[in-house]
Image (cartoon, rainbow, N blue to C red; front, side):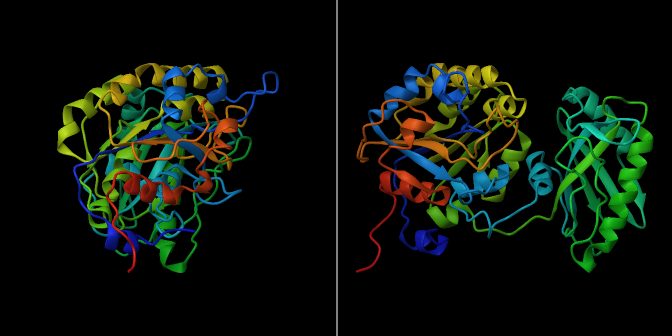
Length: 402
């Protein structure tokens, strides 16, 4: 059962206690047929395992059993926002994440430089993860097109990712993605979902067609895929709902954008977990809630790199004492979704979670992994309940009712 944000708002209080939410992107996995262990279970994680003796474990469903979540729904659920009610396209998250100067009525889309063959079939959705420097050059090539009084502004994000912002009168974002999300087929035409989006669909298709011509000689980045057409929403902030002073420590623009949309202060940080911990230490006295995001686990999973994901988890574990040494009142370690290396993408499998706090009831889990967490005291529950649990263990919720 989801807990209404208005209910939480009515019983939340301020207090000096601090909450740290550590999100290892794509944490959940599937077992290697030869070993019977997932990436997390294969990894040597003495520090995470030690935390289990002080905490309580379980499994969470980011959206619902059987539903494979995107990154935005997975994170929104962890922040306590129903991901179905508060659904948002990837484009606005990326644009917000790079501090693009969005205006009312702008529509943003997330872009991938991709590779297509001579027949126009997608053979690599990420163009070999071209370096950001190359992506920046190509974005300049595509920037400032205009069709039918609609202007397109293109900005690099990271590696193969970019943002395109459509600016014009009476634009509506209700169009489908051009990204087919699979190989061996061509990019999809951008069609309207509602009639009011016809103007955007026409301009977007012209933009894609022109981009194909301009990128023809830039293999492997010889085409683009667009998805997540969206406009900036007006959502209740975490400060309004939880009475928190929240901060985000994330290097990837998309997650910084998502944090901003729910009212977090995005702190400047480096790209490694060690640098993120250094940022946490620097600002620890200034905030009472910290969201820390780690991307490497998800990237390895999407690349099908089982060993790479294991290594990423082990690197995080080795640096973890820098975080736990701060003795946060509540520490939650989990993921926004599962990204099994065996599937090379997001999946519907529930995600391990560990909550460590003075006031929790420790269970008998002693190894942080999918199989052990399935026996944990938290059981299996919706990810939207993570924040209320963290707030309660931080003594930031008063009694409900008489």
